[in-house]
Length: 313
Image (cartoon, rainbow, N blue to C red; front, top):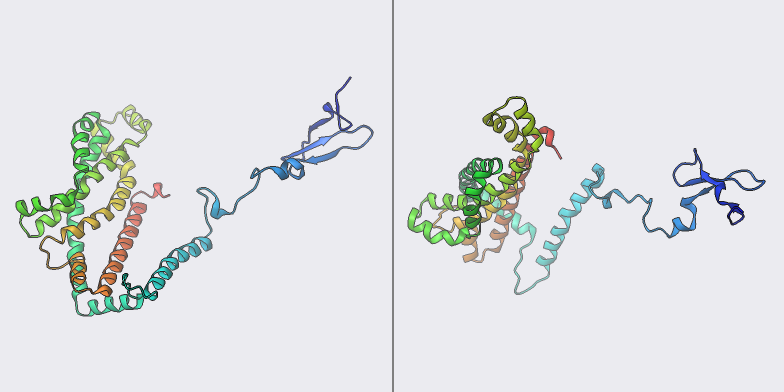
């Protein structure tokens, strides 16, 4: 005897060829076929999120429309500004916060008297020289460590050890060994960033697909050609990203470096403003730090997209 449920035979239920997802066709006794849509059933109403499409804002790694991207960017800029205005107008006796207008006025004053341009150039020159040396060392050692197991075994342990030695703890040694000129400042920037750069560049090189290297060897390429035409081109966008990310650490070390008998520089100027309780000047220099950081970050992003257009995110 055939099994029945709700007056229908079990075999009478079949997929409807044109019913789409969630639709079935039921053949009843003496009646025409009709459709049961799962999405309108009780089970569908009780399901949590199955079949629902979330808003693009809440989707994982989904694209946003230009309107949404611009709106969220503006909100991200306005919220910190509102917090700053609230702190400036709260009238706290212990936390002294100038208004944004006062900070901008301080920037204009330092620009007009020429101190701002000299400080920006002094700090930027130290970062440019020190970080360029750091990245040059990192690319050479990182490519070797990521490509050859022998180089990794030889270099990884001492580099990992030195990475945990705070660069600021080397300030007295820098003064003893290198004096108080520009050399100890640049050396401190190099030491404070090079070990992080080396290990991160090595990780980038390790992520080069083994299949590409094997294919190059199969086509007759030697080790030097594989390094030059396979590993380095494939690692270029990752190396630029390493330089972009760790550049912020170099600027942080610059603050300590410019305490070594500096006579100009952004960090020197902010410490001098702190001595005389010039809060407006301190906030103005912090804004300059942020502007320089955003400008260099965008420049390195542009350079990565130009150097490796195939790797654009």
